[in-house]
Length: 166
Image (cartoon, rainbow, N blue to C red; front, side):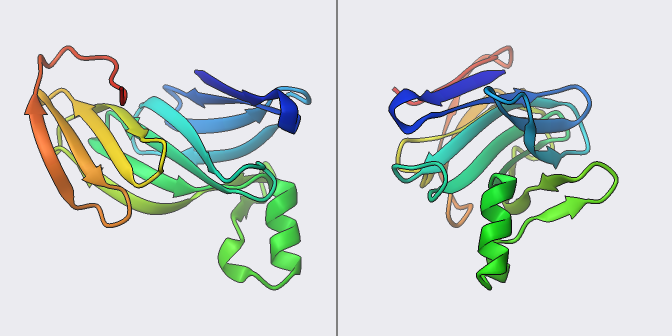
């Protein structure tokens, strides 16, 4: 579980990664689930990246890693903003909503893998253009987050549980 807050902007969100094969973004003030993404396996890490100075107008991306062997970048937005964008005719910004629970789902933008090995960590750098993954195959990999091209690779013990940009 991770938390991101911007006190001066008046927002605070919690991001969860779960054994129910989902990652979710929650609004701390209301306790409301804002968005959900689904994997085929347990989600082991999740990071919310908001590009821009204001969460209501910035681009939201959720980065996930799962034991299904994938790391993914999803386009996600809070429901209110998605509805406003849809009403304004921005169909590409619309999120799919599951009518059973009325929770918006993210749209997958990118998927990378470590040759089928479990990926334990996936994080974006501060620019949102570079993705770091670390998996049970004993590698940490740097990817172009826009194209999915692998930039570099390093070895590490397969027991790694966390990685980040320094």
